[in-house]
Amino acid sequence: MKNFFKKSYGKVTIWVLCLTIIDLIIKFLVVKFQLNVTLIENVLRIVQVENMGSAWGMPGNNLLNVIVSNAIVLGIIIKFINLQKERMDTKTLISLSLILAGGVSNLFERLIRGRVTDYIQIFPGSNFPIFNLADFYIVVGWVMFAAILAYLTGSRKVGNLKRTELLAEIKKENKE
Image (cartoon, rainbow, N blue to C red; front, side):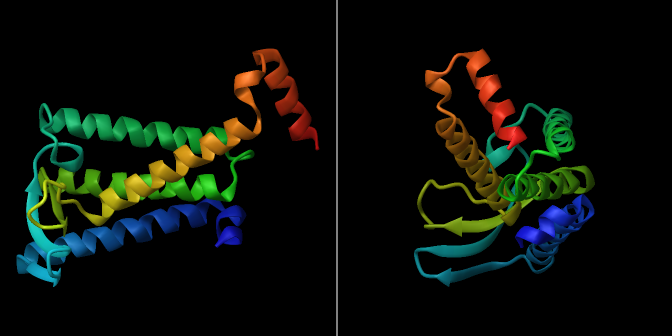
């Protein structure tokens, strides 16, 4: 998997599209067959819920605001990847690819249907929000990205260095 991502950003695009298509196919099947299936009693259920709001069923101001804000975040991530492509490691690229795949899938569905289909319910009866695979991609991607940033800042001892010392240390690492 590591070499897959390092060789070509075109392959990353294919990876994002594959993940997006998987989620969209599942959403299509859930809607078409109006699934309501218990997979593990009191633990996991597939149930169709239409999400008109933003993330995790939170209310959104209106559809246009949700679409525009999603598109802006996706654009920022794509710009970040393009600006950092020479310095980006595989783990960071995977985390951002997951976020992109989830964001693109949910954005596509909002554009086509005006809402997002959620279908994964864990611990039925609890207040945990019903979500979809795209939401899972997004959360896992952001957690990975945050962990990578925490590791990088911790390894560079940012808290103990002045800005000029930090820049000098980064330049030194890049030369090695």
